[in-house]
Length: 183
Image (cartoon, rainbow, N blue to C red; front, side):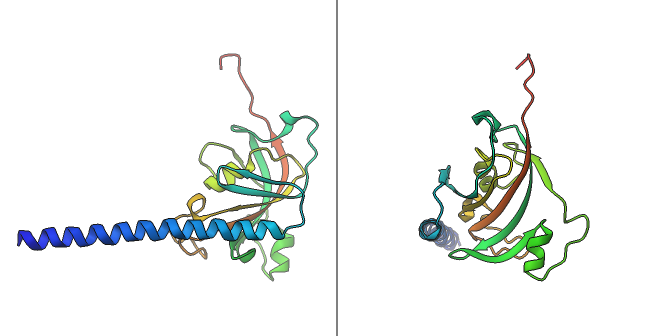
């Protein structure tokens, strides 16, 4: 009996390590596909930040570098979330009426509103949090990242597990973090 338990434990360990190795290979392949897609974009400004690609489609209008998003700032934005498939794949969610119309979808009044949140507090997917850094009001960009920075090994709605994601983002405004004298 004890021998069977040891064999079973060994088998489970082997399966788990293969799965972990397969996952690493999948993430590497996703990174390669993202890089290939970015090379097809005719954009001058592409940033790589902590595993996230930000391809600027239309720059924002910061007056000074201090006008860009940093940790603790509140961002107000519209977005279109796509499963990345060598570019914009299936649209899984948006809060933009114009994007929804292109995909023959309608949004309810509570869905078609600008979203907001404080950056760096875990409110957003890691890929969005990292990608938002340095963006400015008026900017339109793609934020593209592998599954590790998205939903990972979890299926969420229409997004299959281990899916790389592409978010098209339109920054409406930024409210800078207020620093108190006690900080």
